[in-house]
Length: 226
Image 1 (cartoon, one colour):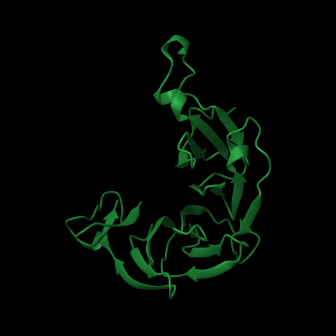
Image 2 (tube, helix red, strand yellow):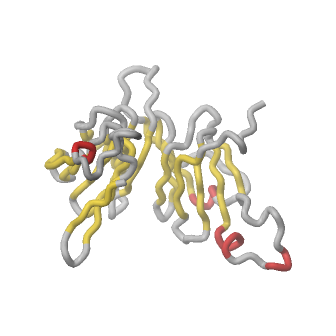
């Protein structure tokens, strides 16, 4: 029998709105809930080998890996395969996890499609959810009713990362592209190809981009690429 502790990969993590809990999702569909206060501020007299272990481990779906996680004030949003679900945070930090409060199906061409929700980003007003998926698309959903608002097409391989700032979205993928999108038009207005620059290319490991983020300071906007 496979030992999950020896053959495991954590694909996603996020903090609870209160900052007291860290949750992590793995390839087996397990959601581990860590009590950060217990780990970071242990009581020495009560310290045991279990102090840094998860407070709870919830099995979401053994057939679907937990690809991505994002949090709102009320919900923990979980991206799996072909689906995004929202759980009440009160249920997540309790002993037994109830069913999700809501779910969104990812658009697919056939029922055989296997589409990972690799990354998600929540708009600053928490009204829109952006999902970067294994079919090379970024989907924009209305969290009020779960409807699909828009689909961003431009990548030619699956998407690893998505982030936003003000009216811009940045996405990065296996194809080595970093694409900038205008949220008002839903169209890409610029793209970067780091693998074409000898100073930052990595021919030994490939052209894929694992993460990209937008930021700003007193100088202006900037992009971070990993």
